[in-house]
Amino acid sequence: MQVSLRHQFLFTAIPSGLGDIGFPVIARHHLGLDLKRGAVIILMARLRDLFVLPALGCFALAMLGVWPVLLTVLGIVLGLLALFLEQSAGTLILALRQMGLKVSGLGLISQPSWPVQLKRFAFSLGSWSSAACAVWFAYTAAGFQMEPMTSFVLLTGLNAIGVVAISVGGLGIAEAGSTGILTLLGTPLEQAAQISLVARPVLLIATLTACVTHWLCLRIWNKQITGRLATEAVSEKNVGHPQEDISLLDCTRTCYRSNTLCLQASNTQV
Figure 1: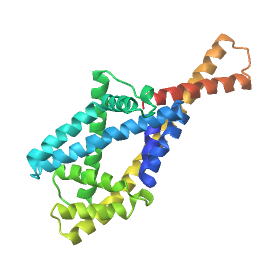
Figure 2: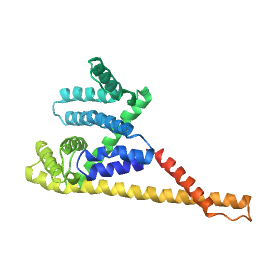
Figure 3: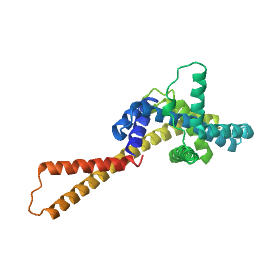
Figure 4: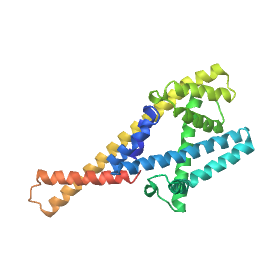
């Protein structure tokens, strides 16, 4: 959970791409992963997002009546590519090797079972669907009444524009992109600009606030667990040796073991 929160905060706050570059460092600090392994994890996740998010955008546009047959077929193709991402990547690396190119990294790309593939695909689908809900709430709060499918179109467009956003938090560039998307969807230019200038900062601030709030809650929870484990350890020692003093070294060792247990507990939530 801590890895996800810190990565999301960096990804939202700093120019696009730099947040993902920092993911391997965060994963090494919290999970003990090798930098190369962490880089492969974020690369595969972004490749899956590269197919899942446009697929959702295609389905949303099709349901809004824009080229329904063509975009539905395209969405299905993109969804299948996302579902079979690891196999596709492994096949591509093998093909490049057979062409004589020296390509490494095949051993780092796992070939998961069907249940694992479906779980990863469902997680990506669910995360982007929840992000679309956040977009819908932010733009509704700004006074723009839109259909739920429009939020998926906005989400896809904003993330596509975010690839070239070089400003902090995408400020300015994302608002301009949002204005353009709303205009293409039939909203008058002046109204689209006003809505974007309110909704996009609201969405940015809400995301950063949620990350910080969840991180603080985790810190408080970890401290409570650490204190409880240390207290229980000291109580057990007192029960076994009521007349024996507890040394500073014993307390230090107890707190160290408690912190290790808390870190392992938090890591299992990622």
